[in-house]
Structures are given as C-alpha cells and as structure tokens.
Image (cartoon, rainbow over all chains, first blue to last red; front, side, top):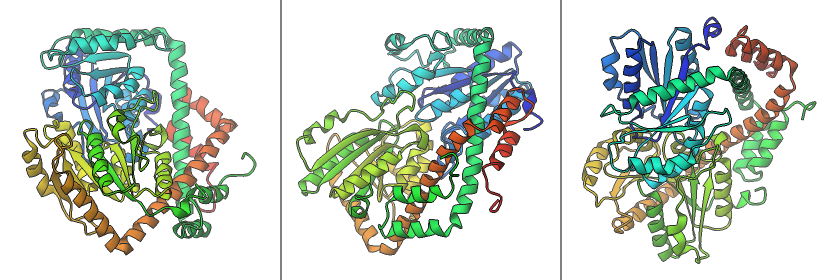
Length: 283
Length: 283
C-alpha cells in the first residue's frame, strides 16, 4: 500500500447500491459491457455484507460475469465485508486503491444498500448509482430514504415490470440538488432487456465531468475522507491495544465479577475502567 | 440504569429476526395475543436498522399493534438503531433491561436480520426465532446461512403460499444441535391465517425450559456477554476521548497534510500516530 498510494486518485469510482433483489449485478454487467466498447479498463468489486459468523455471501453469482473473464481489461472480484466495521471493509477501500494504481479507468463497487453500507459507500465512491425497481415491498420503500440522500443517479431497473412509472413518479419529487451542486437524476433501465443503459452511462459520465469541473469541492471532500480514515485507523489500532491490556487488567476482571453479581452496573463499570486509560490532561 | 440493573435477569427475551418482508411484525402480533391469553406481561421492541443519515425507519407500521395499545400489560415501542454500532444499539440493550426490571415476563426484540444485526441479536436474546417465508429471492436465500447458525426456532411464515413445504424441505438438513445442546426446530406458521401459532409458542416455551435446565451454560453465556459489553463500552469511551485529542494533535494534522500530498500512505500515517497513544509497557 505504501508504494501504491502515490499512484491513486485517477480512476472514477462508481458505487452501485440499492436493496436486495433489484438486479445490481446484472446492471453492472451491462455497464461493464458498455464501457468495454469504449475500450475503458474496468474493474468490479462486489462487496458482500455477508454474515460475520458464516462468511456466507449474498451477492454471489459472479457466474454471469464469465463472459468478461478472458478479457484482461476487466477485473471482477467479490469480497466479503468483515463484521467489525459494518458493511464495507477497509480491505475494500485498499482494493479500490490497488485497482486505481493499476490503471483501471472505472471501478464499480457493488454493495447491498441497507442500514450501514449505504453510508460507507459514500466514503469510497465518486459517483453513487442507487438501483431501485418496481414492486418493492413497503419495508423496502421506507428504507429508500437513506438511499435517496446519497444517490447521484437513480436507476429504476426491471422497468419492463408494471409499476416502473409509478416508482419514477413517486421518486421525482424527492430528488433535489445536492450540497455539491449536482442535480439528482432518475433513469428507467432494464439490464435484462438492455434498455436505458446508454442513458445511464451518459449520466455517470456527466457526473464525472461535473466532479472534475468543481475541483475545489473535490479536493475538500478527498481531504475530509482521508481525515476520517486516519481517525478510524488510529482508533482501531488504539482499541486493539486496549483490548489486550483489558484482558490483563485486574481492575477490569474485578469489575466484571461485580457486574456478574449485579453489585455494579455496566455504565458505572465502564466509566471506572475507561478512566484508567484516558489521560487526565485532555479529559 | 444504575438502580435498575440489579433487578434485571428475570424476563425471557425473544429475538425475532429474518429478511425484510417475511412478516415479522404480524407474527409478533400473534405471539403477543397468545401470551396475553396466558396473562403474561409482554413487551415488544422493534429495532429498526434505519439509515444513520435520515433516521428513516424500516419496520414501521406499528399501527396493526393498535389493538394492544389500551392494554397496560403490553408495551410496544419502535427504536431506530444508531449508526455507529451497527444494527442493534446500546440503547436497545438498555431498553430491554428497563423492561426486564419493570416486570415484563416476555420481551420480544424484533429486527431485520441481514449482515450485522443478526449477530447482535445473539448478544441480547435468550431465544432466537428466525422468520422465513416461501418465495424469497436467491440473494435472500443465500443470506440465510448466517441466520441458520443463530436461530433456535425457525418460523416459516406465510405458509399458505406455495413453496412453504419446499422451504421446510430445504431447511431441514441444515438444522443441527447447537453447542448449547438445543436441537434447532422449524415450524410452518401463518400470522395472517393464525396457523401454527400455538406450536410456535410451545417451541419458545420449550426453549425457555431448556435454558433454565442448563443453568451453568446460561450463567457462562451471561458472563461472556457482560465481558463483551464492558470491553465495548470501555473502548467507546476511550475512542471518544481519543478523537477529541487527535483533533488538537499537531502531529495528527501534519500527517493529514502529508497524506493529502500523498507523501505518506494511510497505514504508515496511522501507525505513526497510534504509537503516540499506545503505552509502551504493554505493546
């Protein structure tokens, strides 16, 4: 990573997110095909919010990507996100950097958008495409709120199903101009029938041009991301060390014993122990 | 919490989890009705894996619970889980304790099981009911792996739909005897048609009896949970303090500047800074 880092920052990183079952993988497949026709080098990173227990993958099925497997300008990989950090792992951030330094023009990062992951894709992607579809249940519709805030482009997939216009109709009033000045846009597509892919590619390219034209905002965002990453990494290293020390701390084990006997409550116990590891000068 | 904690540990906490759209809320509603007929005091905590950005809720729709709203022996509340801690928040853990101390016999904790949350319910619930249904898509089927490991009881809801027997048939060979000695069991139910609710209640009660009979294992598990909670709480307090200190640390800001110029990589930078906050004696 040390040698790679200086060579990063050239690729256009596109986050593809949305509820389960909206056909994200098929849509990415079509986008890859489209960008390959433009002779772009394309990488796909499918980040699976797999169970930390089983490591079982959700996105899976990279088989349909087999068509690209002999094309050395296409790189496809599934990664299981580790539990500790919520959806997208640090490993995927590093993988994006490696692909970036390796000269890929476009890097698609595909993830299921629900709960945490939708937020974390914001820390990785330059452009975020939210994939929706007709006939999602009520629960999923409600979950869209978070997705709507982060999306740059909304792709209403499976638009040959009834209800696609209704999704567009309901979505339109929610679209707004983001803080960056980018106007959110929605496009009906069908990965299966290869409909609207050109319009989606055009929207992605528009957003890339937009980002390049607002260079000040882009640098500020990049610095903000690096700051967050540095704080997170330092916190993790310190936490790792703390855990080791706690295991050997007699005060910790005493507090745990008192907790078990209910002579102490978790909050008081944690404050008492934490005090031993927080330096007095700043607290 | 300090005054409440000694009074906790009496309620039977039942985690209800499973993919979106399987009808968890309706099923809980039926279970509440059933336990109320036994004059049990029942609480329901619906923990929404809402977007940390919007706070938008997924489970929602507590309206159907209105029937119980005038019954003072039923307590129903939705909570949005906070982003930082992945699905189930500390607040929900505390809420369970408050309900426990308040004398509720049964506490249902309802959450969408995907990714992280399914694991965290393990830290809260005594009995875990995984709700599945026929005709879930491939993606969701694959996601079941993690759910299957944590479930004590599997409720195949909407069993009046075609395919319920197929779900049961596919699920059966995956069921096993858990480390605790409990044999996982699957039951076809329909919250809508009120089918199989009695069998589900019987299975939940069986599991409670099982837990009470293996008291040694139950205490060991409780201590293990408290240890994890204490480590997490201490880590959070230390991390909070660390963040404050980092903001004011000139070395941190220097490293950030070097990072932005790509004269330094994130890993080297974080190790350099973390070293300043890790005591030498234990590292």
